[in-house]
Length: 421
Ligand SMILES: Cc1cc2nc3c(=O)[nH]c(=O)nc-3n(C[C@H](O)[C@H](O)[C@H](O)COP(=O)(O)O)c2cc1C
Image (cartoon, rainbow, N blue to C red; front, side, top):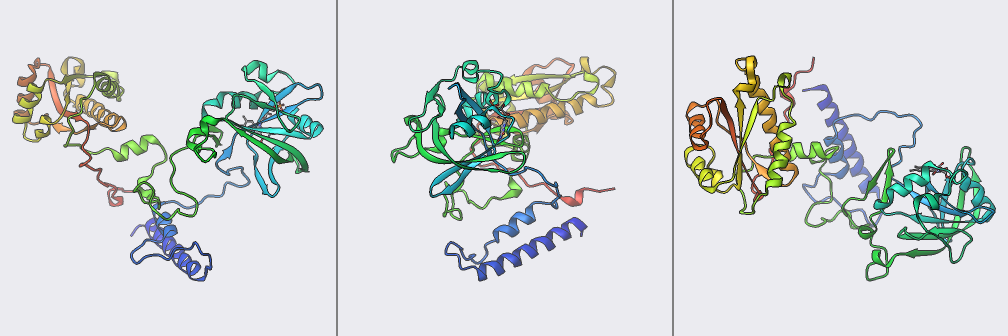
């Protein structure tokens, strides 16, 4: 057994035992006893993440952070805004917000002098204003003027809020802490105002409608889907189990698409558009190609009769009767030049094919690689059905359509297929 695998199992077992011990000792009412056969949550997470933790030293890797905009007046009554990520609710009674600002900021002096500020909560669409307010100082520019945002005098405190932002929180300064680089201002919430467009019936903010901006790792993000309600996090949400299966989760959308690609052999009768097919072809042509020869040519088949003929005559392409279209990836021997014999055209066309398959997955379509080359009989079928010229050699036929959902990706991860040196 590999050393890392062994270590993972030992780690998983240790966390599992710890979880069980904690569960038995816990008197928390919300602690749910594991049903027989349940995988303990922590153990399943550890087992699925195949790496050890690495110390990053002292670092602000607390994610996510908010990206809010603080409104304040200077002594002359000029309104200013500044972006702050080091902010958050810090007390329930009185309900208060803490915001940390560097003395070098214009807002620091404003809030110290005026003893009030507003916290303006942006939606994700407002990222550009948030970014601007965080990169320029009110000492040098009039940020309201430059951005076109509208300052409105707050109703209860001596600070401006931003009219265009969906939520504004009026705060009265109740104290501060000088922490070193930053002064942490504590503001008692006096009033919260929200655009009616983001409220649901009960008069509360609908977070989906708000679509708040998130700041993490030097980037702005918008919020994702709802995964659980507080206190109900062990139940299923929308029919999907809350307990995340990390072996099915990937670091980014590209990996997600790669791992979710499957050979789709069952299609609905929903039509596929020319724009969609062009999207696939663009992806195909973006593939790497030896010496940039691009020795390929793509035939796009949408005629029912031709699809049916190919379906009848190709042994492993019966699904073409259901498919809405097919892309036939051919090697163009005129372009392959002296690399033809070395088989580079096959490699290049294979890379283009994989790009097409991944692009199909990424836009919700299904596709499958059905071989033509190197089988003489199948190659002849395609050449005849499409009247291909002599120098176009069909590598494969890719049926395309909307998947019925019957086909699922295979887990092909096999550590035994890797030799580490
Ligand atoms: C996303 C983001 C978050 C920020 N968070 C803070 C913060 O929490 N505290 C702070 O002092 N400065 C923060 N800054 C920097 C200030 O917003 C920046 O110095 C701004 O120019 C100050 O404006 P002012 O001088 O008009 O007050 C942040 C900037 C960005 C872009």
